[in-house]
Image (tube, rainbow, N blue to C red; front, side, top):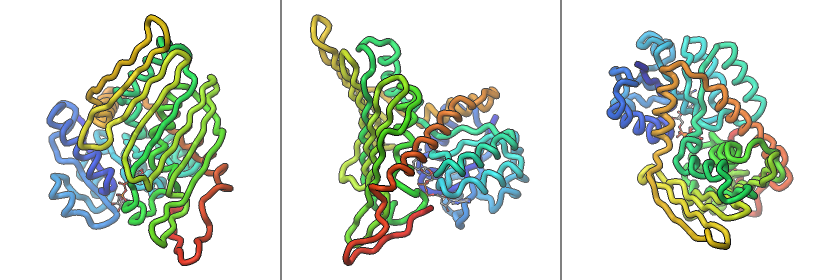
Length: 349
Ligand SMILES: NC(=O)c1ccc[n+]([C@@H]2O[C@H](COP(=O)([O-])OP(=O)(O)OC[C@H]3O[C@@H](n4cnc5c(N)ncnc54)[C@H](O)[C@@H]3O)[C@@H](O)[C@H]2O)c1
């Protein structure tokens, strides 16, 4: 049975990982040690941790004294800019089973260093990519593999959400590519295979007289080696929330919506078939709690000693493509200077 150790008690650690793990501990008690999960943050969040039923520790050394690192799964829920050094220290303290929040790294250079720590420390590391475990993704993958709507022509994603407050309050994500696109790029690669960046664009977030470079919207076009093209648009300054995916096939179309938030775990899928006898539209709404499915699977696989190498390679490829996207979008953004009366907010680098 595995003990949990959550590092980084912000939104991901306390609002996503812990509530889901808490439910899973009740549903699948055989997977989890009875002892309360350990919790560590760079800030003093002892009271937050205790109130949530976690056991706060003040260092990795203390954590190593309270739990057997070999029997512990560490959830790294720090921002992408605060990962590498932490991972080195976790490895040095003997922790080998790691669930890493997305994106795996904010750039390709850090990615290579993370991979080096993974190899040298013999770490079993899985990156949170729960859209790959989503019931909606599985159905879309099945439509593609069976070929029942003909060959896949294109994929498009819209990832819209109002993320103004969080963007103004923290600098953990260097660009809008780092926030939502790790989910969609992974799904596009899983459905249509490897790809190259065809076009990429970033815009700034503007709130009153504040300008946050590169944190407004991100657009990415990928050309898959197998032929289809993927277009992804993410707007972090949108007034509405939407997570939409559309697959265009030679003989039909599938339009899906991933659940919009943590308060309602249902996905929607509408499939339109082409002309002729078999034409028609079918619409379905179904449960899709992808993060629970993901955590449940990875704890089972940690317990069974199964390798995460294949999904780690996919997470790597996602970071490489996003890194290329950032490099090639330099000309269209981010802004380096503000307009009259505007002030540029410093972001992570
Ligand atoms: N999978 C998802 O759907 C999803 C959703 C939200 C966030 N995330 C990802 O989770 C990561 C964290 O995002 P967040 O929104 O929770 O950020 P956050 O700013 O809300 O929280 C991060 C926490 O990490 C702590 N921290 C930073 N460096 C640390 C260190 N070296 N040791 C210990 N604690 C440290 C901070 O003090 C803070 O409490 C990001 O990579 C983000 O992209 C993923």
